[in-house]
Image 1 (spheres, chains in turn purple, green):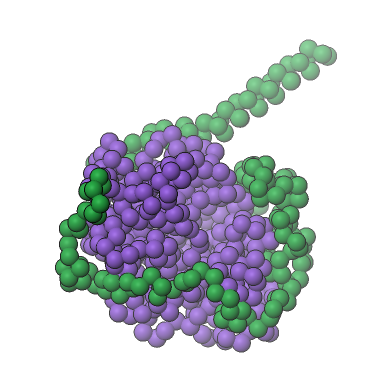
Image 2: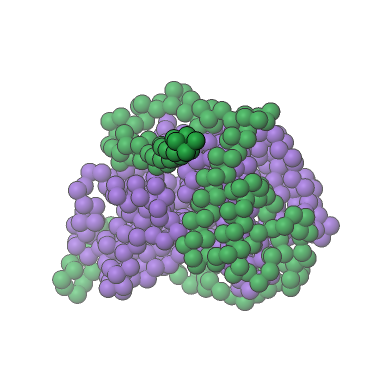
Length: 382
Length: 193
């Protein structure tokens, strides 16, 4: 089969790989019909995540058709059109039994601090991902769900991570009616978080970024106020000024490891990889919110320590909430929101890249060319 | 404002927000949101018909975190350990827990060695690397590389000039150091004869 393959930092290609096979009785093999490149894939692409191996296929956002199932699979069958959460979950460990499907303890031998994720380095279990013609889907009775007939494929693929994570980010902010919410990052997750904040009753939603076209999207797609941090000498002071010097009630970090805006942090972390990520956005969140505020962290960081301003967080009495999104627990409500038009994920799609052009796709997304917000990947066999 | 008891007024009323924003307030009740509370014990809720899953056969020795009691019953089989990078990664897993910086730094070192080994190895294979094509920089010419950057106020453009130096510099310095060391060694050996 044809599959995207990592060849080293900033280098990917498509090559011929063996088709995945059933390795466990509860596996399924899914023929991928649509995949996406996630902003967090860029951390792998840039060489930030430890134990990212040459030869791995990335891709944790995908939908497809079940091609084959293992002997114990009961809930899906060949021919079913399925959407697959980015989390790999056994459904029965201590964490899954309590609904923490993003924190499964039975699927990632390489680390106990993170669950299993498709195509996301060996630090999350060493599973090949869905930027390929076929993918192995472990625990087919737990993860995949039939795509409802009414749902558009592009909405379905975005529900496997970006939309669910954005909504979850707003949810972890514990937003109350009338709260002022600041979202750092106008990528797909930040834009959905901003859209979701309104559903939870926010009184003001302010999105911070430096890319003009993404800020424009924040205004039109998420109905938010926007702040271009490059226009302000000190964005923390600006955020205080526009909130009557109080600060926001809730901040959402939808940037993560490669935040720009502070040269020292960006170079040390994103370029030299001396930290598990550049915590610029998180530190701006800590300093700009009001005392007693809640910060929700959706941005992905690596396992190496970060320079985070915990002293300020402590002195301000902040609540920091974070986790990978337990996608499948979010779906019933999110399906309603998509059906009712309250969330409109496919409006984020800007590029549809044939799998054979995956190297250009990664470069476009990584370098933010051509006003790219969300690139999809269309496999050859789709 | 901040120095007095009341919260600053919002620019829009609830009615105005409801009229302007599709779905405003439909998830107003924090207790009625998905995944709330985070932990709800319900082992049958997610499709598992087992208390502990059947084990996936371990066809090749599989590295694991020493913080795990045993190899997890299911695991990925992409890109098994190989070569010198594999030895470094295996040592990182066998010797250091996830709590130790050495664990992660060795894995990062293994990543760089893997790239070196795999790239060099590719030239002895039927599928040699083409670093230019693999970076996808062709898209600079087909997807508005210049127009996407210039005059847009992008923060990353401001330090773009130094990115190649910062990213490539340590590699060049390491290469130069190795070359200088090797030259000195050859000279010393030459004098010894």
